[in-house]
Length: 297
Image (cartoon, rainbow, N blue to C red; front, side, top):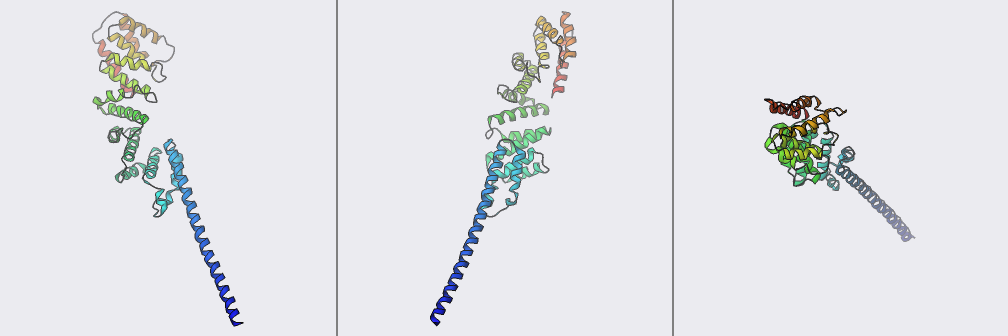
């Protein structure tokens, strides 16, 4: 009987130990499952944030990235969530949204960036940021640093146009023509402006054939259709085709729509109609044009 009692006691102890061990294993499994679920959720949020970023939806992107901020300095597997690309996307999104301190944060991020394409993306973002703020010298510095090797075709067009404009405003005229020329034949949002400014540069270099070609491409564009006729008319006159210039001037003056250079064209028409080559007429036209470019910059 004593043996039987000891056997029952040992059996109970074993059962209790088995239950305890089962409980420990269950808790460990549950904890691991919870951790795995947390990582899976974070990874999904990370992927969605990246998709929003590449679509240019920076507000949605930063909302997703901010959900991951608790894992910024994680030492376990969660640290893979905030890889270099994710940190860069987060910093750039904050910059495009004009978040306080975003500019300094991104510049600090550049100091530890090992990936060259990421470095160029950050420099490109900073260049556009400075361009929007009208800090053209800083924009030129970062556009030059970013180069074009890591940019898409659309980004190259955007970069070259904004760099050309920044150089124009900053007086770096030797770079302007070639940069505007590089975007004037590329369809997209910079096509009209690229042709307009390329036309202006060609005009002031007295390359009237090139200027006429660019201006004619945008003669019906809503932003420039009331601007370019002045230059087209003036070039006809400066090249000696007075009758054609007079006809063009009369046509534009008869246009019921408000024309940007309507007041400037009236004395030009009078000079042409009078059949006189008055002393200083070219300097008059030149002053009008110099004033116009300053107004449109």
